[in-house]
Length: 391
Image (cartoon, rainbow, N blue to C red; front, side):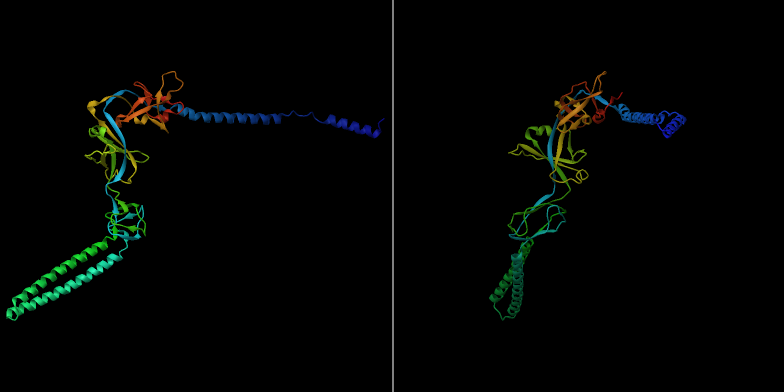
């Protein structure tokens, strides 16, 4: 049985609950979720639209093509050569002795007449001093002999001396004169020997290599320093004797200079030695570069030499492809072929095997393509997604 106080509390709570308005539906939470989903959808649609822009731009790439065909070209010859300084000298010692000073090292720039190395010259210095003393002695004897001859000649004219005495005085004068000449030659020889202890640069250039160090014993003829002049410079290529006639008939000779551009230039002058090496059975060709083409080139670097347009009388049909159409990736060489209509891709990659390089005419293709195929002239753009054949 409830107490009166409890009954009153219960009735008051019931009346308060009846006085409250009904609960509002949770439309705010659902509205926030809907707004988030809508924002995400719009963001995804915008991202998709932006992502599709490069594809649309790529689809508009137009790549020009060329139809391959056989051409009548002469035989071509491509060989490896090397750069060589026209003026290059290996300087050797001309006097024996210990190397006292080595004043240069590989890579140093030198001027004509600059002292590069000094050989111990104490012995030559003593020889110079001895030659100077001998010349002074011979000169004094000449002066005495000349004075004696003059006195004897005067006395002979007065009748106080015999003719024999005058003849003896004259012979002594001639001997003294010869002695002075010999002493002067000895002095010159000693000066030359002193100069042999100084190794000097014959021209302006660079030190390519040193063959000895300070303190080692130098003998006459032993190499000490190699120097070279940066200009002029030439390309040396050894042509097989069996291909010598082909090289001589070439209409044009081109040299590919080392560097990122791989520029092809024509030599200013070419010379073929009139002899064949008995061991290698090759003929040496010297191709002098112009001052502009030879600038900043150093000896020893490898270059590519091609003899273009040789033996036109023996020309034959060859399948050529432009050099710009070739795609080189490591050991692979390929081209992009234009496909027929209806193919899902406008270009397909095709590996090829190349032959001789015929310069501006193109590069001979031995396998991989055939006459009538259409090849993209820009393989980089042809590899893009959506690339099309230019109309």
